[in-house]
Length: 388
Ligand code: SF4
Image (cartoon, rainbow, N blue to C red):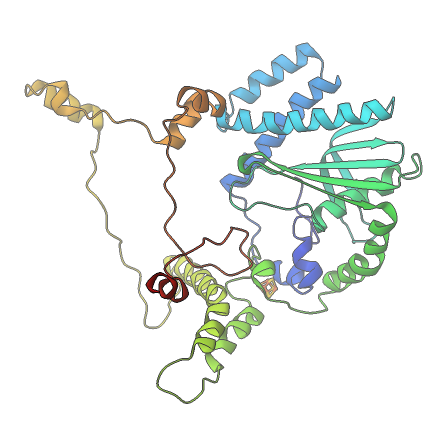
């Protein structure tokens, strides 16, 4: 978490590969989202809990701060439990380090400056543990969408670099271990490399890429990976050109596409569909703001009838003699809503054996998807075997 800077750690994967994205993104507002605000809140809660554990927050102060934190709009049992997973993981690491090093440095929400390699570059390490020979960095991620791996993760490597610069003169750090804790996806990912390897990456990969990005030089590198969260993704010409190359695909002259040609289309279909959705969303927002796109117009979407004032409706119906049974519907809350009320642990204990999960509807994805392929027995080959 932290203030926005041109070459931020969280967007490092983008500007390292697509150097020109950094300056291009400056043309667009860096807006925050409710998810980002929720993430910030989870960090505050985690910092408070861990601060108490390591003695950085006094008990009386802790209670006062906790009260304030519990009044926050984002506070609920699901968030509390997710943060507890992070806190438990952090405590485990702290205690493991204490076994081998009497007096490790433990820092929470530590500003880490890596401007030696990236102009104006800094970030915040959620948990930094420095012990003899080892540096440990932990990053809490509140997201529930995509599981993030620590392996070769440039954001984590930048934090580690900042910490290495800060502490290497005091502790002879040999190994750097980076962990991402993403409780909502049960994801704890750890990656280790030597301080030497980290510094070599910083010199050979990071520094030149950061210089190009700062200067607005280098390459555009559109890909699913780089463009996903880029603020320029809707109107970026490089991305458009890459996707429009598809339209120039030269199919063999035949009435029907071959299987190979379909595979070729499929390999790009997802990117193109995402690009079209991004352009549509961008243009729609502009059109609602008054911009004119020839051949398009803004209309009102479908809307449903709604009660103006529920209390008045209930009063009128009661006065008219209708009973509660006729007025009210009583439904069981959905699984996610109920889990939020009960908390994950109680939910799984109380409702053990009562939650079912039918197999998901089959869907085709690319090989890069992490999910395991299902074994189908209705393939042409299987059907042939069944017949003989
Ligand atoms: S949209 Fe993609 S190609 Fe264009 S600047 Fe952003 S990351 Fe680079």
